[in-house]
Length: 314
Image 1 (tube, rainbow, N blue to C red):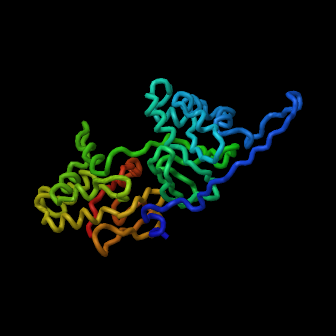
Image 2: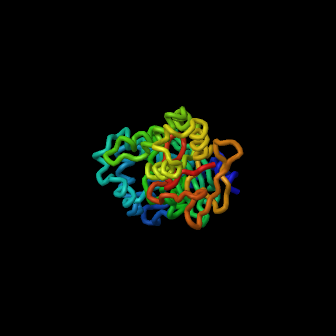
Image 3: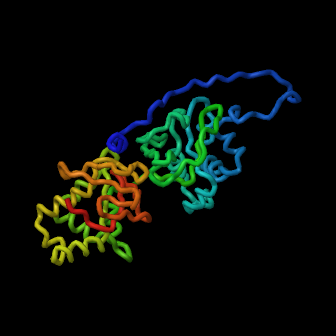
């Protein structure tokens, strides 16, 4: 099962464009009745729901109201007001229009996707960049490993709204760039991992774009120090180069696997030929290394990082 889930570049099953049929009537004003949900377009439906006031304001500022009201069939993964607050966006007027537009378009898919058609994999947004859907062992749906779909299938005349509890942002840095960034913080991390990758000439292997689907299980500096103590060496410079290369490749899975994609007992292929990693969800382990639940699903342009507390040996 795991291999079918984590193979890169999966596409959602059952994505179809639906023609929308509109029927008009010549009722007098006195005869009119309030619109049902599916008589409202996406914008009108959002306006009628007090959970989406920030989303509505953002759409107006980004000049997307007409596009989201037009006839057709689209899907909007709609963050709630609380999701915007959690993202630090309390006043959309303080966000540059172009930035706001790109963020909102990243939440829109130019086709209608009912919940019955959702499956794990990559989905191309209206913004142009893909986001990634995962379905966890309990059947819950997640986007980019962080935003949970909390309500589905709010039907509008021109598409569907699915409610999410976080604003989703497209990644802008590669795995290598993210790890390097951590080394430059006030409390640096991954200094040993980045140094080891550099010595093994493997930085380029974890530096790439959307087409490069990888998962890196990244040991902390403390994990490397424990390895040095176990090997009775002072640092990665004293580890034979071939051994160091093999150890590092053993930490890289050639697929974009968010934590929700992992299945208990699954064996994950690695960049080290004929070597796999075994998942133990019961104790949140990959082999003997524990997952840091505060630092999982760090999304990069070329994949995802999960932080672990031990260097794994093939």
